[in-house]
Length: 462
Image (cartoon, helix red, strand yellow):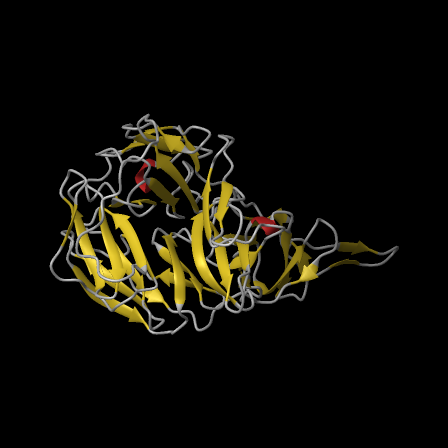
């Protein structure tokens, strides 16, 4: 407590009333991806009001209101749900006391740590050697070992399905600082594409969350001449084939096939010698427009996602032995024509990108193999229908983008479009002078770590 004494010439000495000196301090801690920053005040005395302010660049301060990023603006605790765009911001609070006096706190900056896992141990072409089982990633600042589990790491083989420690597809990881080495229990198939997602559940050694990311690599192939032998027609196929897909359907380590046509979808199981044997009973409706295979449900098998001739999207769950059961139908009638499946929002669940009769649609997985239906297509490309789509990280930002080919519905023209992923399954068009195509594929053809594009046209050059 403080007071003043006044001395008058030849007069009495008077003392003022007591006054309290009130101090304010402000503190916060660094935050990682998806974690809110909490600013807390410590004030002596009895505060009666708080008013928070911010500066975007260290200059003038502006008053804050509660909004999508800020809450508690009239309390002693401010919560800020920001991201890397907030790093230059500073925050302070004006505190009012019972006496009517007010004071400002010190200014504290928004401390956001942006970091993500990056693949390690791969060649420049994004492959591992044929027969090898090891791959890994690096996380700046070290890895919190307790956070590395099936919730923070999702791995899916395009032909062999989901691989985790729980299902025996992965061995226990080896962690050394920020380096993580993983091993498949069995080597992937030759040429198989592998997708890896690290989610926000992965933590740095200090407990901060990593920015989610998804990346792909391929298993290498054995050296050979690249010469193909005579074709062997498939038995049991009736009428023209409208769709096909390859994967291990019965978990025996061999690549099997689904072939769609007039009789529905025929299951062909590999006998281990490269002979595809048709099974007795087809499933699904006739003449599917597209088929994709991926482990999207809780079963142990590779499931089938089917774009029907009627325009719906169906999910058929695989028992693990090649027996399929219809589990859901998305009846948006958007007429998907080409499908690609991978983790589009880096949450550890496989989603669907569909190039449709007009435009595109993204179906996000809710985590149980059910897909959230879009109400309309997005970014329609005029009078063009989807013909082919492939996913890959073409701008090296840790999210999977889409490259799609479209055929005109009125003439013989075609289009090729690159769709860049914002990281949440929302895509923006980014195409400049790409040749029109009926089919697209991407791969690192030059070994420089960048994905290259291969296009083909039915009526035109490749």
